[in-house]
Length: 377
Image (cartoon, rainbow, N blue to C red; front, side, top):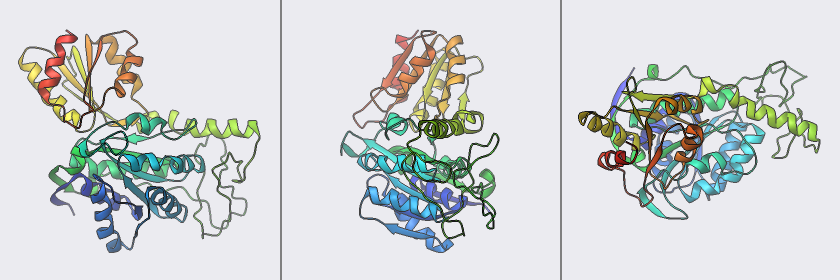
C-alpha cells in the first residue's frame, strides 16, 4: 500500500533503505546527514532491525561492514570530513567484497568547510578516495522521491555485485522537503545476495566458476567458517603474495562493474531530441539546469539536459555520442571543476566544454547557467 508523505530527502533515503530490507545502521552524527541516522534509529526497531551510534566515523563504517558480514543489509551515513574518515574501511569493503550502502550528504569543504552549506565537491573522492585500483558504484538523486527509489537501488546493486555502493546526495536534496510516494511498487524488485547451500562443504568464500564474477556469500553464523582480510587473498580468503592471484582478483573486482555497465548506468535526458547544446548536470544542480533549458528554449536556443543518475561508472559512451553531435556542452556542478574533467576527456575536442561551478556554498541558479551559454555559442 502506498503512502504519500511530505518529507526530507534524508528521511526518504531511510524509507527506501527499509523498503530494500535494511536491518542494520551504524554511524555518527554529522551535519547535514544526521537525519539519516535519526530516522534509522526511529524506524529500524519497528522492523526488528538494529541501530547503533558509534564513537566516530571510522567505527561507523566498520560496524556496518560487520553487520553485513553477519547477514544484515547494512548502511552508514556521513558528510564531508566523515566521508574522508570512512575511506580506509571503504577500501576494505571493496577488496573483502562486503555489500554495503554508504550515504554521503555533501557539504562544502575542504576539512570542516561550511558545515551547513551545499556542495558537490566529493564526486572525485567517491571515485578515488580510497587508495589503489578499485571498482566504484555511485548514485546521485535529484529529488526527494529519488532518495526513496534510488536508495533501494543502491542496496540492490550492493547485494548483486557484492560491493559497497555510494549514495551521493548533496545538502539541498538531503534537506529540502517534497511530496514522496512511499510505494514499494515504484522500487525495482528487491535483490538479495547469492548464498551457497548450507551443507556445501566445498564452499569457497571467494570462489567463482565459469563466467561468474560475483562469489556467493555465506553469512557468519550460517555454518561456513572462512577468513576475511583486507590483504590480497585467494579463493579461500587467506592472504597471499602471489602476483598471479593478485592479478586474477583485481581483474575480477574491476570486471564486476566494467562488464555490467549496461545494468548499472542510469541517466535522464530532457529535451534532447533536437538539442544542439547540452547541459550536463546531476543532483540538485540538475534542477536549475532543467529550468535553464526551458529559459534557453524561450530564447530560441535548442538546449537539452543530460542528468547523470549513476555517476560512477561514468556514462562515458552516451556522453561521447552527444559530444560528437553537439555544438557545445555546459557542465553545471557545485564545485570548482570535477565531473567537467570527465566530460572534457570524453569529448576530446569534439565540441567546447565549459564549466558553471561554485565552491562557496551557494546554489547555482538557472540564470547563471543561461549566462554561461554566451561562451559556447
